[in-house]
Length: 178
Image 1 (spheres, rainbow, N blue to C red):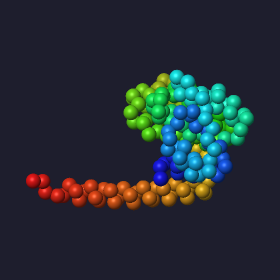
Image 2 (spheres, one colour):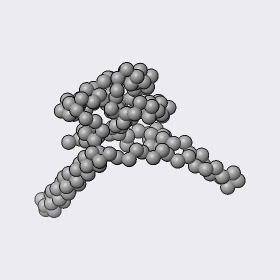
Image 3 (spheres, rainbow, N blue to C red):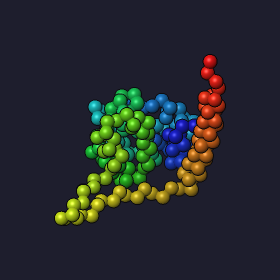
Image 4 (cartoon, rainbow, N blue to C red):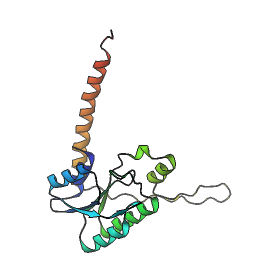
């Protein structure tokens, strides 16, 4: 089971609509079909998902979640600018949908982009002459009991799988080389 599948399980119910980039990772299509979810394609342009189009779709239809890959999107390899990410986040707050960000390729982004992606707040550096309060990020909503249960189950399975893989790997290194 993939992490995006677990995120869908935690944030949606069968019959819900999930917005996706109009060119999206095929794995999310399979997961949505298995979970009884309807996918709603959102148009893209040279900067990735189009927030205006997402807003128009959200006005016409209830969206439970948005699945997107804003960094090196699969299959287009586009990276969404931070301003566009802020616009998408504002739409999520306005229309009440969850954002499932698949950051599979975030580690490949250059340092400047990665820093902007990881920090969605704009802090001002404090100086000794004129100290200014730092902007604090918004607290995420408290997880629902269903979300907590699904994530605990996923994390337990992942950690056990990791132990098995690590044990097998270590055993293979103990074999003498000829």
